Length: 82
Image (cartoon, rainbow, N blue to C red; front, side, top):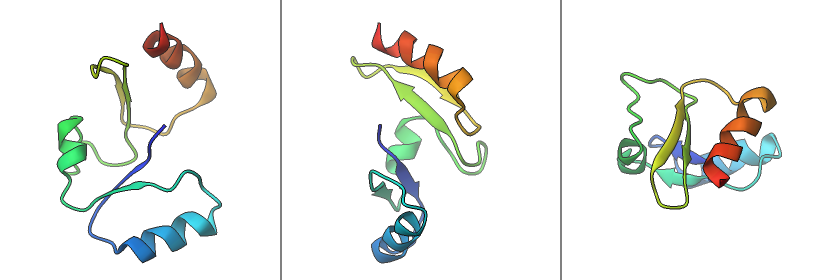
């Protein structure tokens, strides 16, 4: 799992925020939004959070514009990992 921080906040600001909530792993910084755009995420039409599951072959398997829940994530991961 990789978290991606989209925005122009400094790396130090993002690290402090993640540490304050004891979140792991640290996010990949995407200040220009190019990684998000490659996954079909655009702040002007999707908002955040967005969860994108990518299969081993690099194909986007699932795209959900809401926080993940166990009820959603378990079957979605089964699909990606099969």
